Length: 120
Image (tube, rainbow, N blue to C red; front, side, top):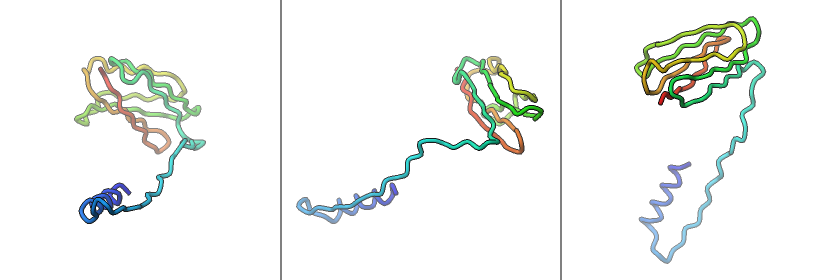
């Protein structure tokens, strides 16, 4: 839709005189107010983000299921990995790796969740 608006404005500037008027309407884009969660979605809360290297990872994991998490630097090198099978809050310590952006990838129930972590 943005390209159509740009085209219309460029056309108007090039082909209309100052006394002419061009009327047009652009349809509104739909607004998403919320995201509906699936019953089998994993509830993940990472805080604080950004931090100085210490993050808390709170996961509400259905009992008896296995979860695996890996952390990658921006070169794609895996620097840490963890696994657990119960709901809990884990501390993730990236303070020894230096400032930068890291990618936390969580594998659970044949799904992949990803979150960027910023170390200040």
